[in-house]
Image: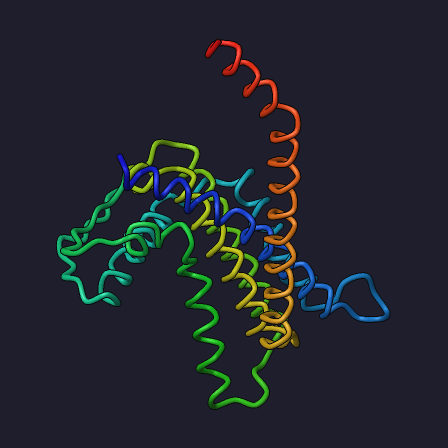
Length: 245
C-alpha cells in the first residue's frame, strides 16, 4: 500500500515534467521550419508518414500480429539489456508472452514507450551513414520514421484503453506519466537524429521549460496554501475554540 502511494505521488511529480517535454518538443520542431514555408520539408515528411499510417489504421485491416511481435521482442530486448534471462518467447495470432527472470519498471513498460520498428529504421539509416555520404533519399527515412511511430502510437493507445497487467502492476498515473514522458523524449531524440535540429538546443529548451513549469506549479501551490490559510484556518480555529469552551 505504501509503495503504491509512493508511485502515485511520483506520478504527480512527473506531470509537470511531461508538460515541459511537450513544450520542448514543440520548440524543437519550430526550429527546423524554413523561412519560405510554414513547416520544413523534414517535418512535412515526418507528419506525412504519421498521417498515412492513421489512414491505414482506420481503413485497412489492423496488423495485430506485427504489433504482438514488436511488443514481446521489446520486453525481451530490454530484459537482455538489464541482464535478465529471457525464455519462452511465444507469438500467436491472438497474443504473445515472454518470461523475464528479473522484471523491472523499464522492462515491464518498455513496449509502451520504445517504438521498436522506429528504432530499427533509425539504426539502419545510421549504419548506411557510415558507408554512404550523404545517405540517399533522406526525406524517405523521415517518412518511414513517421509511419512506424504512428504504428507505435496507435497500438499503444489501443492497448492502454484495455486492462493491462503491465500498467496495473505500477499504477495508472505513474505508468501513464512514465510512458508519456519516455515517448515524447524519444520523439525529441529521433527528431534531433534525423533533422537539422541540434541536441544541445533540445536539451537547453527542455531544461528551461522544466524550470519554468515547476516554478509555475510551486507558485500556484503557494497561492492555494495562502488562500486556505486566510479563508479556512481562522474559522477552523474559531470552531475548535468554541467546542473547547
